[in-house]
Amino acid sequence: MTAADELLAVARAAAAAGAEVLVGRTADALAPSNKGAAGDWVTAFDVAAEDAVRGVITAARPGDSITGEEHGTTRPADPSGYRWSIDPLDGTTNFIRNIVYYATSVAVAGPDGTWLAGVVHAPALGRIYHAVRGEGAWLEEGGRLTRLEGPVPGRTGQILATGFSYDPAVRSQQAAAFAELAEGFADVRRLGSAALDLCMVADGTHDAYGERGLNEHDFAAGALIAEEAGCWVRRPRLASPLDGGPSDQERLDAWTCAAGLELSGRFPL
Image (cartoon, one colour):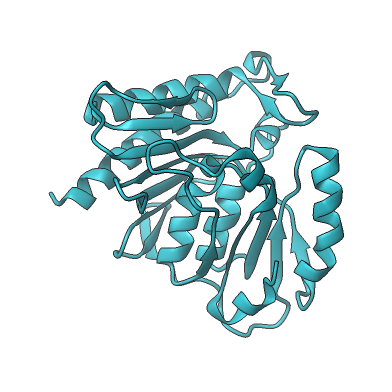
């Protein structure tokens, strides 16, 4: 097994562990609460899924650092330089309301900050997206493995996917820029999971995606999957390989975008 294969195997197992927690969803066990902004929810399942993901990674690679949405960044005493970025439940609002667009997202970066492997496991959709740097992007669905090649070039009725901040001030700024972002597209979708939006550019469901203010764990795996599917991708830089990033202000200002190559010029932001 190559080093890349090992990383992917760990990412797949970790994402599966998180997704298994989500499959156990029951309305009376959600225990939802807000994380500082109206609509920015966390549930008991977010925390349990992150614990499950971390458990798999730590058992397989105890020297690696981990950044998670719920527990922040943890480092071993003698870090390897590899760091995992995990979102145990991307699309928490959807999950609370039993809307199927949610997933566990797991990605790993090497010592130089390059994203090396990523998995987005969407249990309610029955889809597992994965990619390894330089080896393409793939979708496992219904027992079938399909190589992803991005949107169909030049098709009629192109769709843009996007999302909006929970912060009213940031959301108003996003809305002001939206007309420019959406110019030339026939329609818009807002599914509520950045990880899946990026993967759905990779599989050609969306033609493009753009959103401002994402956290690293929102885009880490999905952006790599889109990139390996041959898409043009813009994502915020890491503040540092070990600390993660971007900083809060950089995050609020930065756009994460993915599209077919011929559409990259539509993202002047």
